[in-house]
Length: 262
Image (cartoon, rainbow, N blue to C red; front, side, top):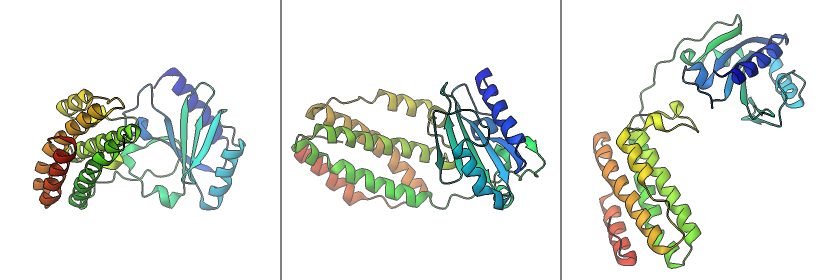
């Protein structure tokens, strides 16, 4: 934790410690998991009794809790007060009742103040939905890929660029699924640690296409080849029926309309 992050944490803790409604506060997020860095938010989980929950959230929004000054703040999911300071430090306070807190994963929490009992580490639940997710992902990838002749035929280059980003995002999602990275472990601003070196190199080598036909078609082709090469073995491993007819029809469609072989 940097000096600025520690100062921010100290200011937040001083405000929480002065509020008698706060039963305990815990470092959570990436710092709670021991994975924080100089670019991480300062995330806290704050335990308050149920009758105090709404008032605490209102006080946060009204600036009445003595928290650090912010230039932007909002409530996320009605429970998380998220703020950005004038120096662009970021913090999130997730407010939970004791009953809700007892169901959290204690492995990602570090006590900062209060006496609330820490919840136990929560074992990973079996991933029973992986096969369905991969099936849906494969079908959606082929569907979006198959729409590219319509965009390029209309000379909708901007729509084509958006389509490339959709396909690239689905390729990233596939790689994370293949690596067994659960959604709960992912971060909106982190990806490198969840990819194998070869996967990261392949993604970084993908072109950012210009707004013109040949570049867009080439980018879609490269993404499609990477996706299909990784998706088929994963589907087989999970026992997913591969959409053979859909893939064959999409290949023929792209070859016929764009001269694109995948």
